[in-house]
Image (cartoon, rainbow, N blue to C red; front, side, top):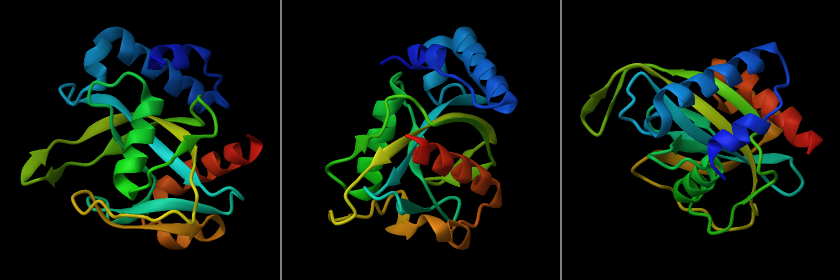
Length: 186
């Protein structure tokens, strides 16, 4: 499904998310398919997967190489306009799981996330914004995991109740809390 279709059906949960939705629609209307590529250096669409186990007590996270924190899986659309497919692809690539499914085809959260200037593969990357759609994903916690050593420093299941102890990005905790609440409603 093209992300614009998903955006047009999305129902914001609060005023902040309503503003985020309108900013995302504006980016898509102004930049079109280019907004789904890194060529759009100021802001572009990304997608994240918040993976949970069947009992929804644990989340599968990666230890992010750049941010040095346990975080959700996800990444750049790189031209893909179906951000659910991007979230699923990234979850598989970053965890080694063969089977990851969506709890819903709709995003559970829309967020505009600032990315500080950093270096990737020896190249400077300027500060920019990720217009991110997060999806609730389901995986089997007994399935074998494989770390993607190019992008991560680890992959493991973490108890949802202890997430603040693992995440060293305090600005992400409210986003994760919001997603956890919404997953429990699915």
